[in-house]
Length: 329
Image 1: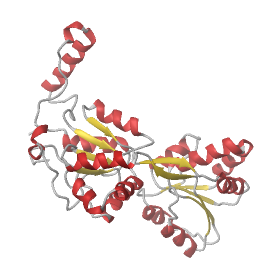
Image 2: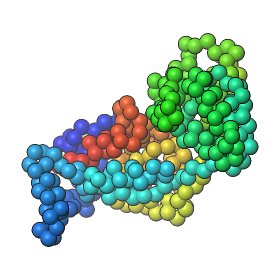
Image 3: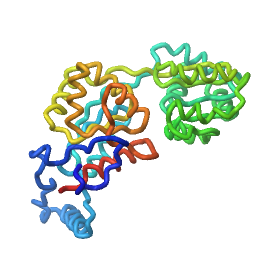
Image 4: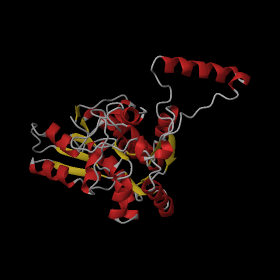
């Protein structure tokens, strides 16, 4: 993005993203012909509305002519629709799939113990985790649901970000202690000033990642920790599809790629040599939904040049992509 474009919310120290001049093929006019509009009143009205917005300096499709790669899985179509409504061409390449834990027994054992009063606190790292626990109960032991929900209402609920908070609200509950930032460090900061000695703390894990820093912090503080992993990540797109995405990135055919989880980053680097992936990502604007994903990219030597400032979910990510890519020089 050049200085003539809109203000990009870039991460500190990041280089400016390549502007349209880096990709001459992209310097074409806005898509969206009005041919045939007269034959269709709705289209004619839409074209007139778009013209009025342009006259007011408001572009109804600020991402027209831009290509954005989306490796999201669970909310792929939601995210893609947000971008397409703004005129973007979306490359759908879900890099990972979210699946139930292959063995439901440990999840059910955790749920039974939790319903029986085994926890004083419950740390929810993802909304998906809580939903998967409840889905496992529904499938295998539905009579356990009422007791689990009663216990959930009693315990102190700690959330890592907006998604677990949303999952609680779906149940008529809310967090007691939301982390100031949606990271493990944020959870630790939220708990840092509390007396955790002899507290029994349940930890819903992010996939099968053991979250050693959080568990060790809790144990050092004198808490007893019980973990549950209600879902796992698995490959979604086949290796050939991922290689195709890397090829398009390398060829400069993609204006931006928007990562929304760390497993997406890990999968991309698992499919091709690190040097190849880094070189491909160097040809596009790399966006991260939040600091956890940005940190995963950084560990592989890639800087996320775009990230929402405060709210780390899809709508703010769409907004910053629009701000970064939506202007023409």
